[in-house]
Length: 622
Image (cartoon, rainbow, N blue to C red):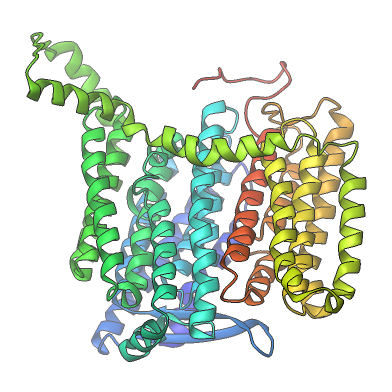
């Protein structure tokens, strides 16, 4: 039975890799291949779940292999299968099969036909990996794949301005959730003194013993999980991103934001429920977040002018109720609710193009305007206030922009003195002097040494802020993001003795990706002297291979699971002590903002309306 689970996990990865080599312009081969392999996987999944239930539905835990192991740290891939995984597996495999069937005809003659199917197959591989993950590290791999594919599918119509803009906005919100995951992983290492598996979390006595001794650590981990789940499932205050994600093709909206991806925040809470269910304060927060989201979303849905936005907010409201159910401990009710909501939203989104045409016809032939009724009573004033707030989507976009993105941009603008003329001298000289301090750290007072890790990590973070806010020189932004990794290594060197192997393991992925990305930028810059970050350039049409090289390089530097940097991040966090919360937060924020800045550079150079007028250019809107 364990081998069967491994096949179910490996199969989606293999079919994605094979799909990359299919002929680009043969739609029949591309869609036929995707449909047949997903049908096989759905049938195999159904057969396995039935067999597993007949055998008694016992939990299955598989420790697959160690990616990296040292004396006090073990990064291993682990798989876990229970009733939650079974429900998500059956619903996910069937809905993906249905959406692929629909996509064969809906995407007909689209220029990115193969790109669309490749991305959906990559999403499916990430989804399967997430729902059968056995520890936080394995879950984070699938989690990151889902975030990337989400960005690529929202920006599918990459010649338009609005899809690219909204794709970047959604990716940014996802990265906020990644902060929660990273900090939860770090805190879990110190709470359990090991890479804890979800199978061990099912042991009530073990969990209760650790939480009694470290109650504040338990609350911190649970809060980070709630932030990650809320960002992924579009709960307040992150709800406004879901309607923006509907810029992608309708079938991708159905599979991502109606049925599967958007429910994975709830999945994260279900998977870790044995950890937080005995923390009353956390349960109250989850219930309040879900209830507040459900009320706001249902009111906002009723005033939307776009049918896809109506469906998006309706889905958010149901997810809010699922959060309430989980806070009450009703896991089985939440699973049934998930399945029903997923199928309903998939159906609604797939028929939405037809529904729009029907409604237009009704409007022409049966429209009856309402009589004007302006009242001054308290109830009417309250009704109008709620209506206006719903039209404005309760200012959720404004709140995020004011309290998160604008302060980051303002801080980056304050660092304008970091420019192309002084960046190399300033940072290289400062970094060289700092390395000397590492060799003499035993001669420095202990109080100073304790502050230095946070100080040097903060320098790297400030550079990332500058890269995030930078708009003109590409090389300045690129260099600052790369240097952040070197500042992190320097900071941890003061904190704990990193071995030469660990440093080499971590920085090797960064250096390789940096060289490839720099070569890609130089290649485009040589042919396009006016290249900058002031607007979208759209050069993916003229340099598609270069765009792919740069995207892979950016993902490597950002710590995407395909790279050594991803494992290196976990190694770095294993050297942060339990009382260094500020250092852990600075490092997490640096990783997250650098990932956002890298995707921003990619989207500015290669996506959006083309900079040259002889290419077909979509009208800028929004």
